[in-house]
Amino acid sequence: MAGLGRFFLFGVALVVAIVALAWPQIEQQLIASGYSCPYPFSMLVTGKGAEKEAAAEAEGLPKYTLDQLRMYDGSDEEKPILLAVGGKVLDVTSGAKFYAKGKSYNQFAGTACTRALALGSLKKEDITDDTSDFDDKKKAELDETKEFYYEKYPIVGELA
Image 1 (cartoon, rainbow, N blue to C red):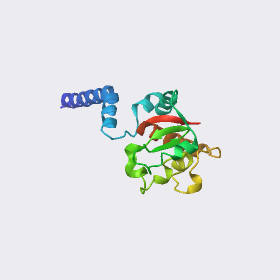
Image 2 (image 1 turned 45 degrees about the vertical axis):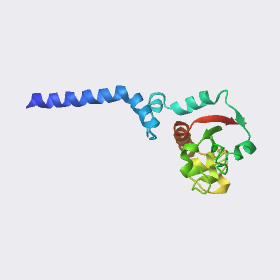
Image 3 (image 1 turned 120 degrees about the vertical axis):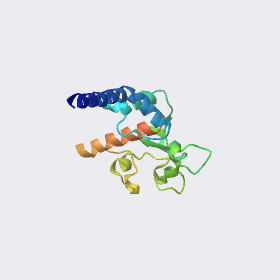
Image 4 (image 1 turned 90 degrees about the horizontal axis):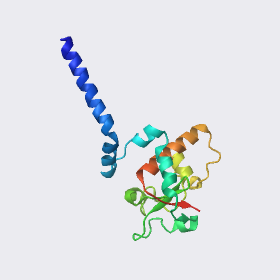
């Protein structure tokens, strides 16, 4: 019986090892299928994968002023829906069910809304990029918010 238990544990360990080795490809398939991973491989390996990738992706991309960003608020169906998080401009058109005109988060479309998203706030006064008064706990929440958005939506520019 002891041999059977060892065989079972060896089998479980083997399956875990195979999944661990294949996880980056599994994650890519999940993301391509529209699912997001709660712990992206890049974050597990580097600690701040999405944020570092976001900085590299944003290099060479167009710069948007707040006035230019407002033109992408979801009111024109011919234009993408953009918003800015942490100084990066993201195309959230794939999340139109949240950000399109008349939807629950449309007030964030066409804005720099880092503060509101990090706080989970729907207050108009929180729709800003200013997070200078954040304490360590709020800064940690801000980092998680940026990770989420940088993993989920393509970066198409930077705030000027």
